[in-house]
Image (tube, rainbow, N blue to C red):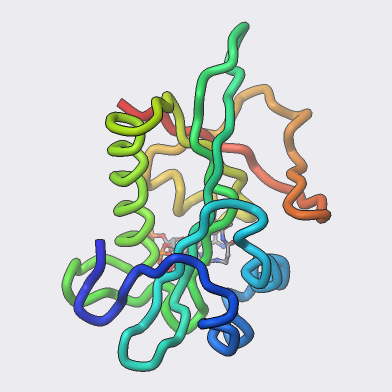
Amino acid sequence: METKDIIIENYDAKKYQDAIKNFDCGNFNLNNFLKFADEIGTTFLFVESATGAVVGYISFACGGLKLDKYVSPAIEVKLFAVDKKYQSKIDKESNRTYAYFYFRSFIEYFRSISRDTIKADYVILHSLDDKSTHFYEKFDFKKFSNKDDQKKVLVGNFEIDCTPMYFAID
Ligand SMILES: CC(C)(COP(=O)(O)OP(=O)(O)OC[C@H]1O[C@@H](n2cnc3c(N)ncnc32)[C@H](O)[C@@H]1OP(=O)(O)O)[C@@H](O)C(=O)NCCC(=O)NCCS
């Protein structure tokens, strides 16, 4: 999952204090949540090895999805963001954008967790705007047809408007 230039690190607020402060994905809440992301989910940082800058991060937790009558086990991506400087930028090794490469890598990781560690039938998340929704649709995430009651998500103490989406792990 790592490349020559960027390493994946366990969240460490102390070690990456300055880099976390400087992180800017263009969304105030997602910048702010990074300061206490370990309270929200299991969090990994994508760190530029040369500078120690945080290129992006992902935070996830156990979840559940009720599509009809029964609740299915799920992995919930609580937070995912890439710094503005790296958005739409191509990683030379993978020839994909950084966002695409890391998100795809974590989808593969979720598949392996589900196979080897704890079963999950779905990955779920709450997209925050049209750009993110378009991004997640590239990974076959689907919007719900009738989940009007879930168009707000609580992250930390903040209630945020969102588009809930899901993806079936095969
Ligand atoms: C969401 C995010 C991780 C995507 O990273 P990125 O580097 O911009 O992603 P990519 O460049 O790979 O893809 C962005 C896609 O959105 C498209 N896009 C850009 N602005 C858009 C808009 N306003 N509406 C719809 N699509 C848009 C781009 O054209 C591109 O699609 P394409 O590859 O089909 O052309 C990044 O924008 C981010 O961190 N945003 C702030 C935090 C956030 O909102 N996170 C998601 C929380 S759910």
